[in-house]
Every structure is written in structure tokens, then in C-alpha cells.
Length: 106
Image 1 (cartoon, one colour):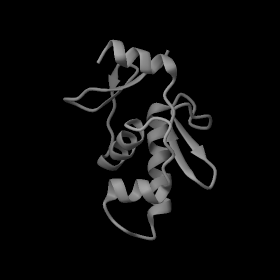
Image 2 (tube, rainbow, N blue to C red):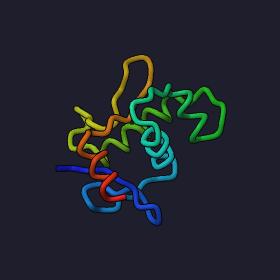
Image 3 (spheres, helix red, strand yellow):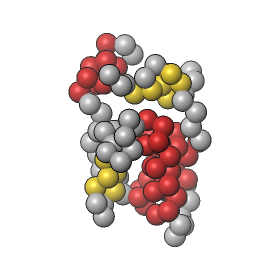
Image 4 (tube, one colour):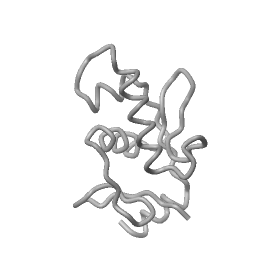
């Protein structure tokens, strides 16, 4: 079983191993994971993580989500954690067993 978590002193943990993420990858994943199920538009993600206003946000967010999926998803073509809502944005969708595991092992 795969599980995603966070070690407060280091970085994201996936399947028991710490994974390297750029500050933007970590920022996007952190934003989504702090609000499971909440839909964020690409513009909202860009403004929250990059702290800029730019027309290039669509590509920046999409490519960052793609890199995160390569690192935390078993099958990036069928993602379990980061769901794309067509023409709207992204949601973090933890599996129930991941939530239970993190409650038991904070």
C-alpha cells in the first residue's frame, strides 16, 4: 500500500522514503494537501505558490503538477492523489487509509 505523508523536519514522505521536491513542487503539493477535496484553479495555485501575477501561470502550474505526479503517483496517467477537474483546476484526494494512517502516526 502506498502512502503519502510529511515529515515536519524534512520534506514529503512517500512510501516511507523522503522525496526531493523543488520549492514550487512542494508549495503546490502542500497547498493542495492542506485542503483535501477543495478545488483550486490554476490561477489560485499560481498566486498562492509563486506569489506573482502573470499570464504564464497556466503552463507553470500544469508542468509542476506533472512533475509532482511523477514523484508521488504509481501511475501518473491515472492519478490517485491529485485529481484534474477539466477546465476548472485540481484537487488533492487522499485515500481513506492514508488519512487513517496519518491520524494514527502523526
